[in-house]
Length: 482
Image (cartoon, rainbow, N blue to C red; front, top):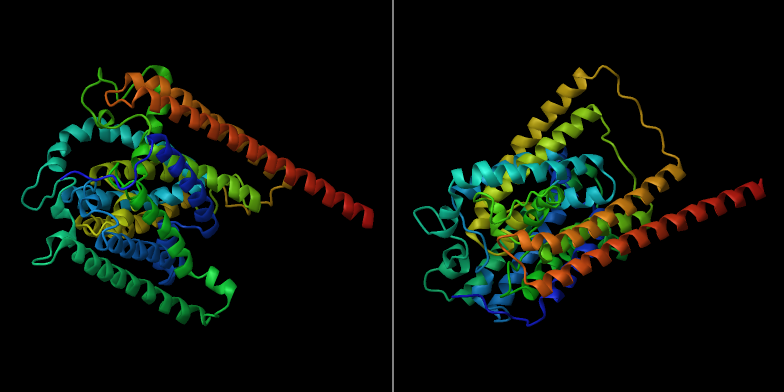
């Protein structure tokens, strides 16, 4: 069976939808520090984490929501699994590698994006590492591991991409898939909620703070915040059903950064003249490209508005060069793991469980084990770099307001120009790709990306100017009253 479009719309509307979704998602993720790496450090050190509660609730409500939508017939059963990655040894191996690299890179996929947008230099290095890791995967590993075979066929202990065998509600004996969707959705919700409540119990016991029920407390509750994040997954499930992967995914478009970097030098990784590789299986740009780039943009703009944006070099016990190097290597490992497993912390852990799939369950086991191994490895490496550093760690001075605003303005211009360049480049590179986007659509996508870049520059500079003149006015008032 093939997927059935639930909503009929022009393809360019998918671009606009995911651009807006990513922008809002990035701003909210930055505010709530939504990141599996931060959450894992908290759990390993404190045995509780409100951020992990947020993550778990977002997954739990997503699983319940997708299950109910299928159960009531709002989304056909086939749309719940038609674009879902398969499951097998490669899922477990890749998710373990991803979890390991995620801890070294100091950002899961969502964390890497919003941290990059709010000025964390180590996550810029993680992005560059991911671009290089994608190339390493695409050429030596993609063909050597013969992954296209494992992804396409069902076998012993192996489920192909898009197979109904991957969808747990569809394989319950004697139960229709629609009823099974409700059953499995509820079971996933309760199981994940139980884990979140265990963390909550540890948090209350450790902090000694009893929950206070008022409007502010509810809005800041991990359970409310997690539910808000779940709406992004559920909205995507409805909007993209029948058109493409209708959960959320980010590693594939992030991997395209390597192509954007190399194309100006005449190197087209997805070109038909290049030896068989992974880049030839994807277009140069997609709706999810806008989603991930707008997560960065949303984090940048909202953090500028809140006054939290700052160019941040690594701090703590490890040397800056050491921490940046670890982040870069972590990014390479992330790319390799995500591509082997066909998923990441969003496309595998969150989307896989929201999709009520065997893929999601296997990915969850791998990413948890990999995260634990990566946590201890990061602690060891960061400590080793700190010990080898010839200079003692100096306390960071508070950056002056105008320096902070200068960095903010420079970032706005550079990132805006990057978006403009991607928009222009994608229209040109499309003709070189083996997997092409239709000419009218690639033109529209390129134009939307250019507009997005201009808006980022305009808003970023406008916000910077506002803060600058407000600071001047504040200083004038202080001097007048003295």
